[in-house]
Length: 84
Length: 156
Image 1 (cartoon, each protein chain N blue to C red):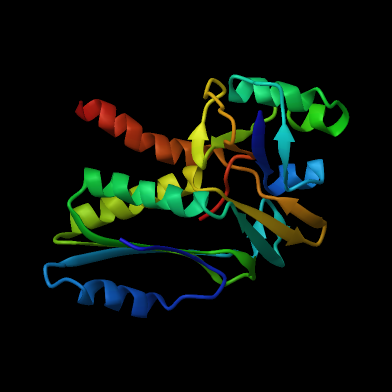
Image 2: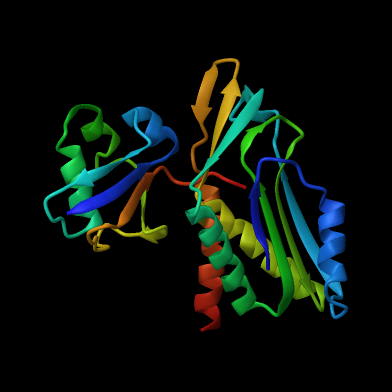
C-alpha cells in the first residue's frame, strides 16, 4: 500500500529527507511502519530507534504506536515539540 | 476564534482591541506574549528559526482552543504564532482570551499556552556561538500541561 511520510525538524536533518511517498507491504500500525523504516539500517536505524523520543501523527492527528495506518494515510515523524 | 500562523510580526495592542470590539459582552481580556530570549541553556542565542507542520499546526491549535472553550466560558480567543527567522526581543506567540470575567480568561489563556507548548507541531532551532542546535523539549512543559489533566481528574 502507498503512504505519504513526512519528517520534521532534527529528524528531517538527520535523515536528510523531508519525506517520501512510500510503497510498503501492508503494515498495520505506526509501530510496524517505524520498524519497516528502521530496517533500512544506518541512520534510519539510529534516528528511529525505540529509545529516541519521537512523536508520530497520522493524518495530522497525534498518534500512538498502536494507531492503525490505512492506504493513502499521511504519517509524520518528529521530535517532541518546542513552540511557544 | 481565529488561529493564525505567520512570518510577520504582530501588533498585540491592535489584535486585542479588535478582539474586544467584536463583542460588547467582553469584560476581561487575558493575554500572553512569548518572546525570543538572547540566552538558553547557558549559551548566547543569536537568532532562532521556527519550523512547523503546515496543516497540522492550524488543526492542533484549533483543537486546543476548542478544548479551552469547552472547559471555560470564554467569549473569543485569538492565537497568533510566528514561524521563520526570529531574533532576541522578537515576539513569537500571542494568545488572547476574552471573557465576561477575569477568572475564566486567565485560566483559559494559561491552559492554551501549556497545551500549545506540548501539542502544537512547532520546533525551534537556535543559532549560538557554538553552532546551531534544535531546542530540546522540557519536562517542565509536560508537567505544566499535565496539571490540567490532574485538575480534571480531581474534579471528577
